[in-house]
Amino acid sequence: MTRVHDLAVVGAGPAGVAGALTAALAGLDVVLLDGAARPGGQYFRRPAEGFHAARPGALHHGLDGFTRRWELLTEHAEVLLRHRVWAVERTGETVVLRCLEGDREERPRTVTARGLLIATGAHDRPLPFPGWDLPGVLTAGAAQALLKGDLVLAGREIVVAGTGPFLLPVAAGLADAGGRVAGVYEANGRFGLAAHPMLAAGRAGEALGYGARLARHRIPYRGRRAVVAAHGDTALTHVTVATLDAAWRPVSTTTVACDTLACGYGFVPQLDLPVQLGCATRRDHDGSAVVTVDAGMRTSVPGVYAAGESTGVGGAVLAEVEGRLAGRSAVTDLGRSTAADLGRSTAAGRPGPAADRPDPALTRRRDRLAAFARALQEAYPVRPGWQEWLRDDTLVCRCEEVPLSAVREAQAMGAADARSVKLLARPGMGWCQGRMCGYAVACLAGEDPAPAGRPIAQPIRLGALASQTGPETARTDPGTARPGPEPFPTEPPVSPAGPDRPEPPRDRPHRKDER
Image: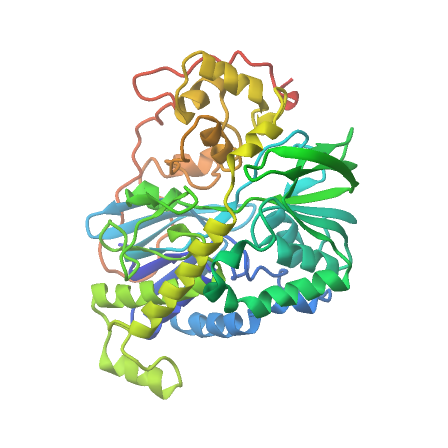
């Protein structure tokens, strides 16, 4: 017998914590899981407990409020940190989450709940260019994560490039921490929101704040510029910065010396878990696949909710609001809200309105924030001219060392879509499973990126996977409610080439670490 929670929440970022707290305060039995050692997701990433080094004050923005919500949540829900969810499945009226518990010595564990809220966030969307595989080149999110989570500067002489307002806090944070930022290069115009003055007015103070910090550190902020090549023998020494036309085709170039390049072109929602469950998806304004939800953040699968970046990239404030909406919907659907529970919450100074009633004010706020997110996507799109930055020997897939020439050769052999290119040239079959190169390969194939259907969402040791294929061996929680889930299916995995088509032979040269 295994314990069955009312609601399981995957993700301890702003959306997940808001949704879990809303549901828990309304009386639901909530369990929250996250693979990290500390809560906060990417936005509120912070050093490990016991890390006593001083932290730049600018990195504390909004953290105090999140910490209060987290502490309240730990009093009303079960919290399972260091639990990486690698698979989810529906079994009758429940959802089964298969996890790996711990750090180096991970143990399989199964968590079961009647409902599931997915708040797994997003990851960086890079674009390939000559030299992007050099040491010293990393995504903008990675540079910020090093600073927030480990208080480590990615380098000394830093260039920040890409598109979108995320470049500003990255550059300002690196400079505040002591790095010399040689420049911020925005591939689109610097004033992308000029076409949306009403929406931009609400964020004018934040933009001016970043502008003042850049000015204080004498950091140039250039529009219609992009890093189109990185150079160096064993590590990055300088980059080529191009002036772009409206389609991002290079017009003229210059070089900038640096030892670090932080580069980002937006974010890609992490949809592994909702796709495993069969949740419907749609195209967002930037062409990315996102989960389809209704006004209450319900997905197309009964009992499954999504909030935050998985429904469309929009930032931490929007994610928190969506989490609260999802939590209220779970309370309504699972039917566990009681007057006594809500009365105690009100007496304690917590949310007073019944969590299972529609909240027009919350819905209107979500609509305003979502409109701003759409405006950002329209103002800072990825334009097709980036493909002209590539050379035949430019690596498109760094994991499998697949150059552009191999992609073009696959297309000449008849590959008409990204999946066919993957089968013939192997981009997306390496360590990251297409998370880094999937967007670029889809664009080169002339299509929008499709939601990845990965049966395993997190890296897992073969021993841990094997333990899930026999009799149920996962640790169960105390308490009895109903029998545990059926064992994980024992059928052999299907080749990426499909059940009826064998995978093409690997006739490429061996990678360096295979020799």
